[in-house]
Structures are given as structure tokens and as C-alpha cells.
Amino acid sequence: MIEARNLKKLYRRGAEEVRAVDGVSFEIDDGEFVAVVGPSGAGKTTLLQLMGAMDKPTSGTLRVAGHELSGLSDGQLTRLRRESLGFVFQQFGLLPTLSVEENVALPALFGGRRDRRRVDELLERVGLAHRRRHRPGELSGGEMQRAAIARALYNSPRMILADEPTGNLDSATSARIFDLLWDLHRGGLTVVVVTHNEALADAAERRLMIRDGLIVAA
Image 1 (cartoon, rainbow, N blue to C red):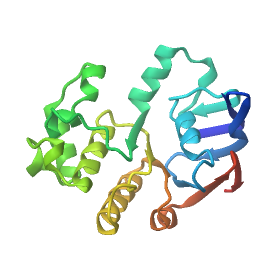
Image 2 (cartoon, helix red, strand yellow; image 1 turned 180 degrees about the vertical axis):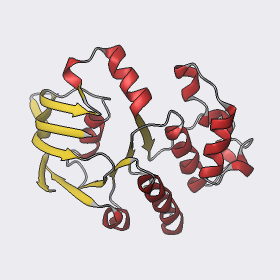
Image 3 (cartoon, one colour; image 1 turned 180 degrees about the horizontal axis):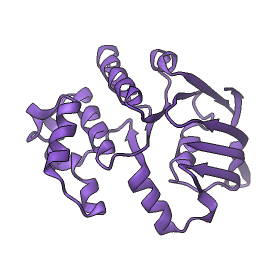
């Protein structure tokens, strides 16, 4: 699913060069559940953004879902993100003026195919059918994250990329999100999670430990 070779992402901060990702090589197989762990500022989120085609590497090669990303146009990258990848973030990213069902259906605005049955199926899957007409401000943190996961699944992606999906949640709610991610993994999805949560990291099949932009254990 993912193959990186000598992948680098460098930034300039004034006169300083920040080596956010510093020549890493790794593979993630189709259907794996992988946790990306490491201290704050280690490069975890930058690495996830590269894997999700949300940022471009400074150098190195990266293949995602069979595509060499450096060879894709901006339009092709957008299509790859829309059709093959689902994204889940710590801050949920729900639009506050829309209902749960409208938030879940948002990818249809970009994909051009609104499917009410798909929304119904996903709300049932994440246990939010009874909250479909509520707005995000009326939900708990765990419910907002489940709505965000449902939205990420709308286009039937091959891989879910989650950046600290339990960072704003208590331990009991985090456990329910773990269970949902594991159910998705058992259903065949590749799941990659950036996390500080040791319980979630322990639940993954494998860890990528990153420190100072380098993978120090895999």
C-alpha cells in the first residue's frame, strides 16, 4: 500500500533548516494496522501528510496505492486522495452548521454522487443513526469522532490515515474509537494512526517509531 525510499521533507525557518522527515525508508502492506509513534516534534504528522498526498516530499520516492506520487499532477493527487484515502483528525473537522448526516455526505459534493443509502449504512456502522439530524455542537467528543470516521469512509477508501484520533477523548471513549478502527481493519482496510496513546499503539500490528525525522524502529 505504501513504499517509501529515502523520503525527505525539509523546511526553512529563517536561517534554520528543519529536517522534519530525514531520509526514511519503509513499507506498509495492504491491510496492515500500523501506529506511528514518537515524541512531539519528531515528524509524525509530517510523515502522515506525505503518505496522504497532502504534502510533497523534498526528495526521495513514495508510492501510495500503486501510484508513484511524484509522477502525478495536482488533479491526479486530488483524485487519489478522494478515491483511495480517508482522513481522520484530532479536531474532527466537522462543519458546525451541518447535521451529522450532511457532514458524512460531504465527500459527495466533490465526488458528484450523493447516495442516501451509503450515508444510512455508515451511520449504522458507527452507531450514530439516532443522531443523524443533530449538529456537531450537540454531540460528545466520541460521537464527533465517529461521525468524522463515517465521513472518511464515504468513498470506500483503501486506507484510513488518522492523526491523533483520540487526542481529545477520555480513556473510555478512546477505547470505543480503538474498537471501531479495529473493526475497519478486520474488514480489510489499511489503517495508519499517528498516536501518543500507548493503548492504541499496542493494539496496532506494528509500530513505526520516529525521532528527529528518522525511523528508529519498525
